[in-house]
Amino acid sequence: MNIALDIDGVIIDFVRSFNTVVKKRLDYDLKYEDLYCHDIGQVLGIPKADVNQLLHETLENNHFELIDQAKESIDYLKDHHYVFLITGRDESYRERTIDLLKEHEIHYEELYFSRYLEKHHVDVHFDVFVEDSVEEAIGLSREGSTVLLMSHPWNVRTLNLKSLFKRVNNWKDIVKEIDRLSLK
Image (tube, rainbow, N blue to C red; front, side, top):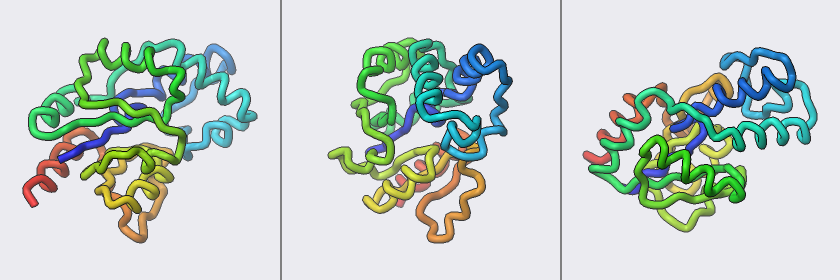
């Protein structure tokens, strides 16, 4: 199966590195639970230009930790499936992103950069897509992929009334669900 993985919020713990920048620039200790929605400007009550600067500083830092069990799970998945990475990061961060993935020994077939809410435009069919953005998950579900939404405070309140995605809590859940789907 073709498996697509988002990077930030699925493989990389972006929030931890972002918090370091928020502490330094805004003198605020941003807690993981504070991120009640995907719109950081709304959460922090700051203009989009300020959000973009914080995001830029975070991405320039390039010191990121992996989400628990991400590497081991991706290693397992690559032995049984084709693993693709798709990120909403700007193309200007390509080299930094590749270096980060090399540093953590994350293996993948191809890496795609996409604008926000346009991941479903990538010209490859994915059987399963693991994402943390509800908005992206909805768009991807319309393209026929099974979407696994990794639970975070910014997406946990979504009701999913049309069952457009399946919620997963961690990498153990992701692997279990992909294994189940591959047996169909």
